Length: 501
Image (cartoon, rainbow, N blue to C red; front, side, top):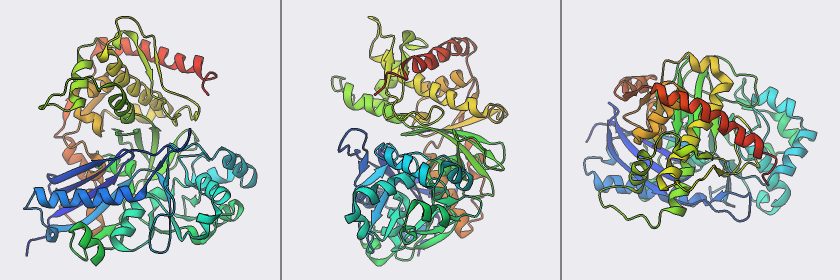
């Protein structure tokens, strides 16, 4: 019998699901990724079929077992799971009753106003330590479903997030982890429980709320049915997991007070570890998942999504290269363009924006297009625009962010040295281009290791791996140019904000 020396990390993302099998030294033993599309039934709506996540998990795991014969089910010690934000209603058998409503969804405007009057935003902020808003937080979405689809609510047993949905498929247990609960507007963050008073005022049936677990808790083990579908071993423990942002922050090594990290995946996130929640509703407060700290999160909705959107809509005429991905081709096109992309400015607000402007009506903009604009100009403008959005966020916690000497950068952006250099120049900070850039699944691995006490993987294991990354320092002349363009970036939004519809 093989020794249990591998951990499976699963991340259910906005644009795809990734499964990575890690050895205890942080090396990748096998990995697979499945991409999928978001369903947009009408303008302002954003949904996904939860079964697509589960089929992606099944496919990914089986692909890994087939492609890497040495990675066998009996070697898997534990499974960790992180996820994006999407409200999913299920019946007693765990079957989805409706498409999951994602973080980009803007349908619940009326419900937000009703909740402000019925519950009071002050009470929600006081208890959950976060603002009341549509899309990002589950409460308005659940209220919309109650108001508009009572037929579904009638048959609903629990509401779950994507990680909870996959955990239920694997173990049969219904759950939510504390970090994910922190972003529902239904919790008491200090107590780590559902807030019964908010639920009563908001008329949310308590029986719809799943059991709460710490990120380092084991929820259950792989069932016979799940084992048959995935190839995993019956009885493999599955931990409660965490918000993808929290997992990514842990994976980047930011776990102690004062640590910071940037993750650029589908969304962009800049995170700083603090001892207590910060009383500023432009920020998100989330439990750290591994230590008794709070991660202060600022998130932009369309970071990697901006590049994917451009890829999907404007690259069909690019000559394919068998030896290069389309992203590598786009990266090379951007490298041939000077800093600031001939002063072409991109606002990455394709579906509104969260931090720091919290404007659901904002839209994406290419500004200052000239006759000299090329494919590379547009690509570079996207890379710079996303970096500007993160810089815009960083100003809200400037003192904490400035104290961090080197910022680990993970996610898809870490695959591009050019994008990492742009971040270093725009932020005027030394950036660590992480060698293992899939920080969500790496964080899943580290959190899951804490759940079963694997001594070879301490809570700050991400720091050990981060030092193996590439140090990228700001280029002085680029910093000066970006300082000027950043102010123009902010001015473009301020001039256009009343024009969006």
